[in-house]
Image (cartoon, rainbow, N blue to C red; front, side, top):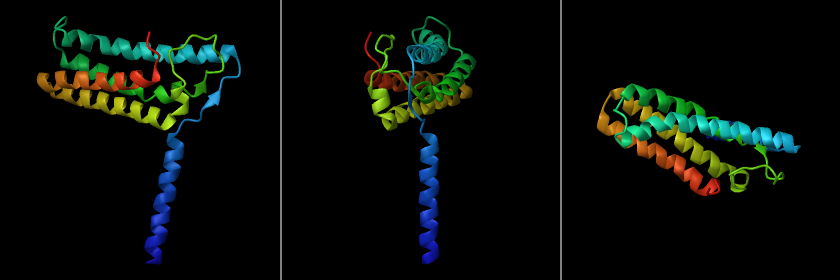
Length: 162
């Protein structure tokens, strides 16, 4: 019984350590220049995600022919980029109001929720890439808006409306 208890505590300790490592350390920007650089970096990340998503939107609207290979490649790219989202917000830029950003304070105030939302996008992008690799048009076309919904789910609560 004691051995089982010790094993349980080891599991708890390892899980807590993994959770601590998974969290991104947030630090406030020390200057307007640092805030501006952080904002530009994360905006570039989101532009890259949008660029990878645009051909899929065109395929959904029948403006471009279905191409499973393009979708698989672009979904994998979105997955790769989405993993970087929490780190892109590691610098808290809220103190510098003169810097233009669409990020709401909630990004930094609700880190667990923010990370969960970005993890959902990473997972959805992986699901889309997997569907596209099968070549099955129906499941792939269903997975595109599912991934888009996870992006929108984050935008709805963490991004100011334009």
